[in-house]
Length: 171
Image (cartoon, rainbow, N blue to C red; front, side, top):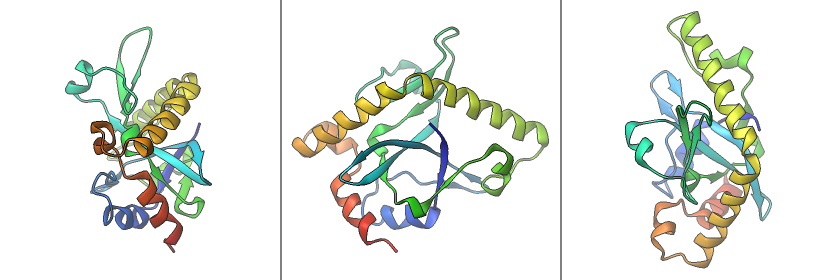
């Protein structure tokens, strides 16, 4: 699994059609998206990662939400919001290389940058160890949302079919 940065103009384009698409720009910081998790109907899907918040401690893993937690220490690093996964054309992503991170995010010091890279490495190791679980969850979520579009689960998720349609017409 690799880290990717999704083109912010593409994200702004998708937000016009589905408000559940996660915004990626926070001032000088850019929110990153985790790499390819599944391909459905020829579309690559990317899943946004979010910083851990106190409310996430109380939440359980589910079909549309997964904690990135250290099994040994119990420390919660971040969460994957599978409900907000989006189809992304290959032309709208850039693989994040740690030695090029400052192209996508600013840091106030070298220590802050190194700490952030360390955090990304820890999160990536956890994701790599559960890649098949995340893949299965994403596929099941997609199928269930298409099969039961009026469900409470589908109401928490991006409109995958609509976003696929809009992704195909993006230029």
